[in-house]
Length: 219
Ligand code: B12
Ligand code: SF4
Ligand code: SF4
Image (cartoon, rainbow, N blue to C red; front, side, top):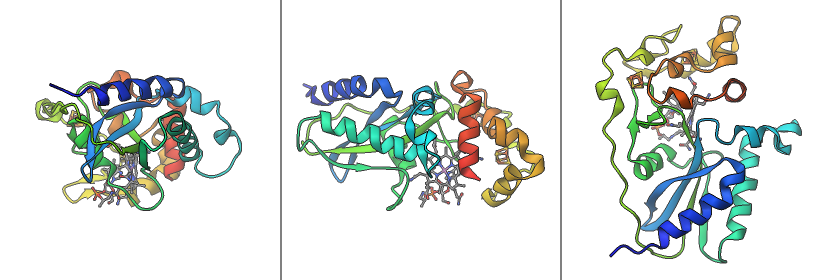
């Protein structure tokens, strides 16, 4: 019989997080303890974040500061002692969030490095991982077929104007310099053209201001 603690906790967390637009993405284990991955799907958090004070105050890393605020408020609403640690995909140490995404969501890497989900495509990002004290049973992660296996044209690999994706990997320095330069307006204002070329989950593509926000932070 399955212990339903994890499902009940996930449902409570989903409800508490719902006004922020962040959501639980799946369970996995960190050092044999239950952990829940939290993130956004498409621009699910953009409307709330873009009206929040961390973006308006002009200080550095507004999305990260906003995330810490949302997750800290969530932890305070849960029973005392239940959350033993919160890990973030920014700051130190550099936790392996793409490994967490693989474990929690049953998805894998696309040829351009981002993890791809059959429904949400390349449009998921991870904002936090919460580690819990109790050793409750976790629901099994569904393992999806890899969407790229059925994509013969692979437009993500031949759309980048400077061919940043090669057999040697992702040339992020060339990418950054293009995005910051005169010819990089399309990427800078509309988002990575290689990512946008993927047909999977295109309904979840980030809204334009959300794309531009990340590209500005990236350069
Ligand atoms: C360092 C880092 C970067 C560096 C990569 C430097 C490099 N050498 O390539 C830079 C700043 C360039 C970067 C850029 C982006 N990143 Co980044 N990045 C990270 C970070 C903080 C650490 C990764 C790491 O060091 N892992 C540890 C090492 C040992 O493992 P690794 O597998 O070798 O890691 C390498 C890859 O992850 C790679 N990488 C990181 N991001 C990206 C993005 C792309 C497109 C590719 C091809 C590779 C790549 O760089 C790492 C170091 O070489 C993670 C968050 C985290 N804590 O995991 C996010 C993360 C991997 N990035 C992410 C994203 C979304 C991006 C951007 C698309 C952001 C944006 N602009 O919207 C951009 C890509 C630019 C573009 N073309 O659009 C997401 C991926 C989500 C997903 N679905 O898989 C993560 C998980 C952050 C998050 N909050 O969700 N990133
Ligand atoms: S364009 Fe095709 S190969 Fe590239 S990420 Fe999308 S599904 Fe995968
Ligand atoms: S942001 Fe632009 S330059 Fe960088 S990888 Fe994407 S398409 Fe290429």
